[in-house]
Every structure is written in C-alpha cells, then in structure tokens.
Image 1 (cartoon, rainbow, N blue to C red):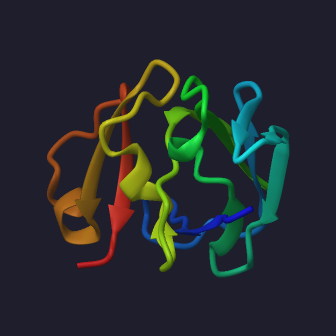
Image 2 (image 1 turned 180 degrees about the vertical axis):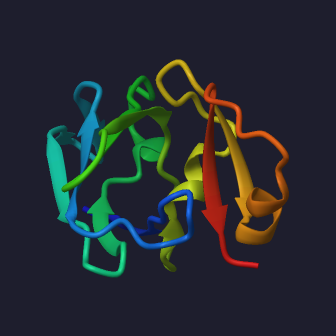
Length: 136
C-alpha cells in the first residue's frame, strides 16, 4: 500500500522553532485501498528544530471516499491544536503539512499562511486566526 510523506517545519509566533512534542494523525474511519482495510493512527516526533515527517495513507484513493485526517500538533511546551478535515494526496515527493490545510478548518479558528516578514508586519494579531509561517 502506497503512502505519502508529509513534512512539517513548525515555528512559534516569534519565529523560533517549536522544540519537541509530537504530531499525531488519526484517520476519521476506515476505508478500502485495493481491497485492504485502512485506518488508524500515525505519530511523529517534533525535532528540536521544529521539523519532522510522517508517512500517511493518501485517503483520496479510498474506495469509500469518506475519510479525512485529524492532525493534532502537541508541542512539549504550549497548547496543542487540531487540524481537521485533512485530505492527503497521492505524491511521490514530500508534501508540506501547511499545503494540506490552507483552506481547511482548524478547530474553530481561521488559518492564514504568511511569511515571517508578513507576520511581523501585522499591526495587530487576531486571536481567532491560526498563523502558519512559511519560508519566503
């Protein structure tokens, strides 16, 4: 069964890396991939520099087509948050986590993808927005 590599580089609002913790992906139910029942949980550690990766089944190929992932980011210091409704594509190359959630729901928050410079230039940070910081 094929998987897609999902990579992440997590940063704090001040620009420093999220140091430690884990990222957990839970498939919302079970589906079939070429007759194989797929479901379950995958966990990845967050490295000291905020990076990591995990291998996820690309749920876009499911026979039933009714599943999505709930991805929980749980830093070792700080508040955990959930990314819901995540759909993983088929890809031979690694896929960045933020590309999967740009239009997705993040609990009850709105998400915004910004560079560090754009984030720093914001006059006021909205507490109802989850800011995802990406490379320039």
